[in-house]
Amino acid sequence: MIAQMHRLDAIANNLANVDLNGYKRDEAVFKSFPELLIRRMNDDGVYSFNMGSVDTSPIVGKLGTGVELNEVYTVFDQGPLKPTGRDLDFALQGKGFFSVGTKDGERYTRNGDFFISPEGYLVTKSGDFVLGENGPIKLKEHNFIIDEDGVVYQNASLAGDDERMVSVTGNPWDSTERVDRLKLVHFEQPRYLEKKGDSYWQSTGNSGEAQIVPENQRPKVRSGFIEGSNVNSVREMVDMIEVNRIYEANQKLIQSQDSLLGKLINDAARV
Image 1 (spheres, helix red, strand yellow):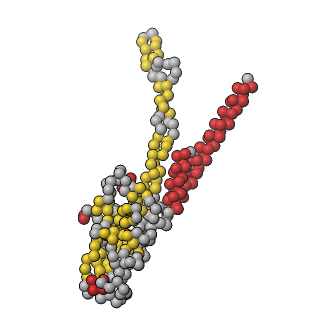
Image 2 (tube, helix red, strand yellow):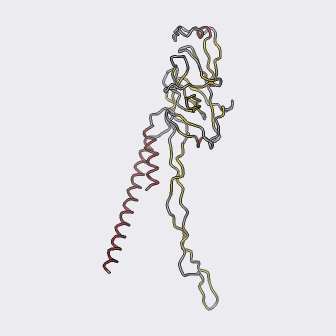
Image 3 (cartoon, helix red, strand yellow):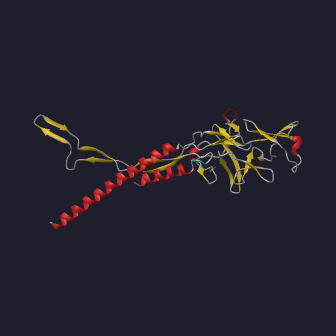
């Protein structure tokens, strides 16, 4: 029953985050307790007769003793790409993470719902810096392009004056220059990443440190798209119903055993 409670917690968390951009579903993984080997008591397994003997083996078989939670495993399957048409929405098609600079250190996310701060930096919804390979990226709205490789370009002739507003139609793109490239990272063991708030992950000793994705393995950066969660709500609801039924069956079994044990004790007391 405790195992099913852990499984239900994972399912409930998945359903709660089904609409969270870049969310990766959790799955409870279990391991069994050591099995017991059942043997017949007072029986050496040897059957003797006039012509000799036969080993009939006193071993009856194995008895399972239940399961326990081993880990809550994050499934990093690609989520669906949803078109938004917004210049500051980005999705990664392939394996990897955006790097984000927070007050607690570097964090990693698949949620590409970005904004431009009042100071002109590319930031997440919570105001943390989106990192390029050279640090935070300073941009002006309607004066940047990010290609599929994550390279950020701007019109240099409009970048010098922070007070000057730029419109989509009023940008001549007459002096294009490279600003930086998005810092896209991967890990040797991503399954050991630790989930944090705001759709972030943190590296651990088991996951290894973040490494910039090699050139031939970089995910494509899709501008104007957002990666949805990889949670299948129908599947999670079916799993939740299954967990509830298993839990109720175990509950009834324990109640039956408790009732039979109580009856046995009462009968023994009357004798």
